[in-house]
Length: 112
Length: 113
Image (cartoon, rainbow over all chains, first blue to last red; front, top):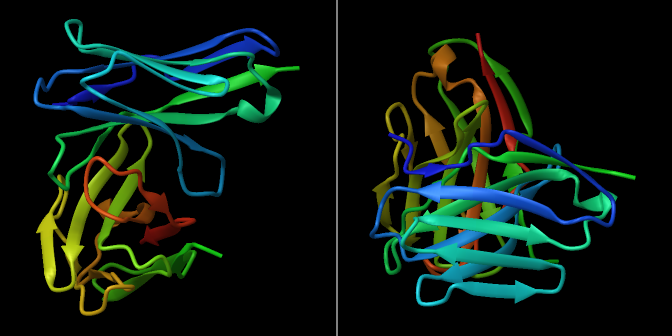
């Protein structure tokens, strides 16, 4: 039972355009969500997070949106750059616990 | 430099031969965790540790052991590896458990034949 789903295995976007990566979850107890970026041969690196008390969080070119009623979050990258080409994982957790559930990842390719 | 280190980075072994993958962090983090990454399955949590001598199971703990005798180290032990444990393994640490972001090591690619 995949509690966190990333239904798009890959996405290609032109440089300068917006990249939108999506993530759906099933567990209504999740109250904290994170996005990680992973380059080949490296470990994932933290990108941005959002608490369930918010519906939007921004950090530079990266914005995460949370729609609790739809159990859906999305990561927007504007403008996309070739260096953003990587695999992106969303992760969810119940605050105060020590367990994380990751999605299967979306491979983003930004075309120059 | 703040980092999580893992050793070895690559390992090929045979079924049943005990092995240990080491993980060390220099950030004085209380929380450490092990994950495996498999194609189509993403990252799955194996074990985690909230502090020294405190560990608990993640989603896929079968066939693995861990120990946390020191704050900085969190080794992953495969007592009797099997081919289905062939995977890419990541160690991570954070200052606390959820909801804090984790810092990941570079990964250990394990092949069990």
